[in-house]
Length: 491
Figure 1 (spheres, helix red, strand yellow):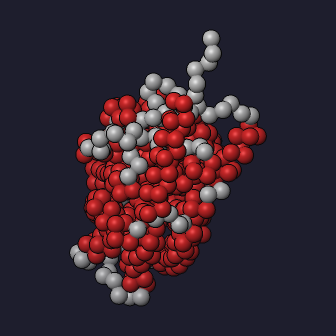
Figure 2 (cartoon, rainbow, N blue to C red; figure 1 turned 180 degrees about the vertical axis):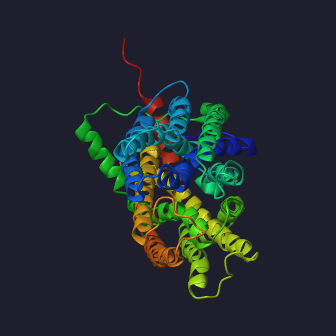
Figure 3 (cartoon, rainbow, N blue to C red; figure 1 turned 135 degrees about the vertical axis):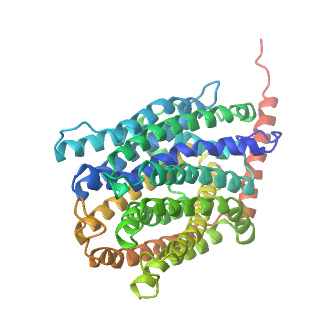
């Protein structure tokens, strides 16, 4: 056990402050998934496939750092615990590099901009890793309770969406509002600069608030034994045995397909909103709230469904329902059964479908995040090591790499259907965004449903988790008794 069994239950404010740090992660996500491709492609004027490839490479390079940070987080020993020193260290460099990402030097060629996006993008994502991985790994240390872990995962996801959706809403409604010079506000470069300034400040504050807000729980942690100092080869062998957990491999397999679709969807949403649905920036701002509404409802919905169906079954069902809601408005439009562009009923209809998609999708993600926490004890029984940081690092590596693949795929689709830099939504051939939808929808369905099937290889339920926790407690008690019975050395 890492959490002292006599520790009080997590209070509301502790859960709140723990989740607050994900605001910074949400801001980073909306920058990379929603705005970066459109900004560099349609505003700066760089080819979409070049921008999306730079984002993909940045995400893959950054992802390599995740297991390193996770392993370091597991082995660190300080008076502030294993996680908090790294969390504090990430705040300033992560926010500063986000700021630089939207202020590229003028006069650069396409190839120079590619390297700028790649290098600065790697800095943003690597520095935020020093917060995100230790903070994620903190969850199993905060509590070992099966249902409480779902609850704090819900807070974490809600605040991540609050950060991302809140900044997207503010940016589209205010920063990218149409002007006389830029009647299509999404093409106004000044709006993206303001986004970067405000986003960097909020990221800095959120990370520091969450790090300070969970410091008081350190006194309840029982520090695991310091890992033995071993060479790189043996370390890799230990990591391999840790990652061979069947339940964890099931979650990773699900995530590879799901987060590829998430990256693709996030990058294409603003394209679909602008060119397929014909929305202005204010309408797009309203539609960003659907994700926040869904994430807020997931705070209560995910724990409820988990108690009824168990985490695995609930995650599977919700993933299937999510993709039905996500694809429905496009299928209706392609079938001639959706309101026409400009109809006042179009925005609320798209909003409703998207909110239900977000509710189910976020709830499914919350449950799989909590399922990783339950793997920690099962793995500890098998390997003798607690590897929270390593598990969450590998999960984050998967999310980043596959999301990057999704963004890259989105860039290729945009280029393939013929949305060229500077395309005006008022004059574009309507068959071009229609073709984009015809390719996007079946890809989305295949990725989501195919990924969900892997979850059936995950076997931990409430009873087996509680048995794992009790067995670890028994071993701790036995170790303590054996330590007391060691005879004093003879004088």
